[in-house]
Image (cartoon, rainbow, N blue to C red; front, side, top):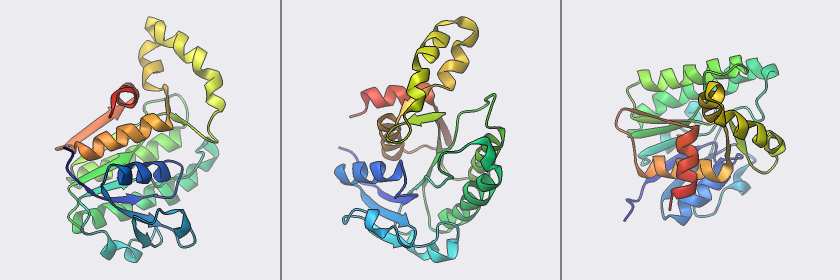
Length: 221
C-alpha cells in the first residue's frame, strides 16, 4: 500500500500542475496547491489552497507545513530562445525563493522538473534550469530531477510531426543516444513519472531522463 504523502505543489494551476494535482488526489495524497491570486478557481476543492505570489516567498512561507514533499513546476510557458530574461526572472527566481523555504519547512524530498541537457539549442533555458538544479543540490535536499525535452499534450502537439524523425534517429548508432535523451514524452508519461518520484522519494539526488520517464509512463500503476 502506498504511503500517503503531504505534497506542496508550486505551479499547481499550470499545464502539468493541474493534471498532477488531480492524480495525487485520486491516489489519496494530501495536496497543498500554490496558486496565484485570481487562479484559485483552477484548484480542486479537495486541495489545501495556498493563494500567494509564487515569486515572493514571504507570501507563502508559513503555509508550506505540514508538507513532506515539494513539487516545483513553476516556469515560463512555451519556452523559446527569445525568453532568456524571463527564464532568469521566473524560473531561477522561483527556485532561489523556494529552496530556503523548503529547508525551513522541513521538506524531506524536493521534486523538480528540469530539462534534458546538453542540447544543441535553448542554451539560456538549459543554463537556468541547470543552475536551479545546482541550488537544490547545494542546499543538501533529497531531490529528484526530471529532465524531459518536450512534453506533448493539449496545446503542445506540433512536435508530433517530428516523431518519425526521432524514431529513425534512435535506430542510427551515431544519433541514438541524443535522440533518446532529447526524445518526446507525453503529459501522461510526465504525470506518471512525477507520481512515481513522489511515492518513491530519493535519498540524495536522483535524475530521471527521457527513457525512464517513458518507461514509467507505460508501466506505472
